[in-house]
Length: 172
Image 1 (tube, helix red, strand yellow):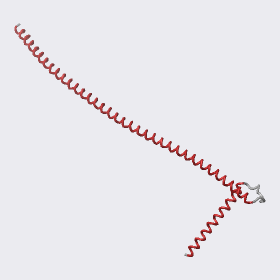
Image 2 (spheres, helix red, strand yellow):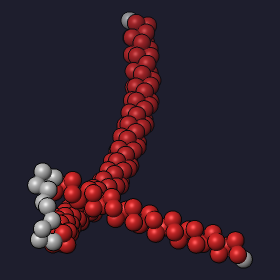
Image 3 (cartoon, one colour):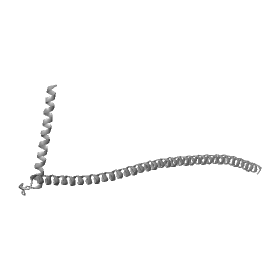
């Protein structure tokens, strides 16, 4: 029995030692696990912080880009509005000029008609009382004849002036 007791005691001591070594091993493994978890958590926290910083930088970059583009578009819109105003002003100026030219043209036409009437009246007056009237001739035809005569007289004066210039050049 003593041997059995010794064996059981020895077995008990062996089991106690095994238990103690397993407890120590368990504590070491647990410490390693905690260390690995801490490292893993630290690694994840670091990664999360890096991602948050990158996201913040990207947001700032996008905000700057958007601000610059918005400013560029505002400048472009302002420039186009200015150009539109200038074009409108130019259009108004051209319309005023056109109206002015139309008024001048009308006035010139009226003056031309008045001069033609005056020329016709003077021609009829110069004929005298007994001059026969050509009722069949239209106003325009009479004016064309008068104009042709005036041009012929002018051409004759020019030809005469050129002839005199040639004679003077030949004398010198």
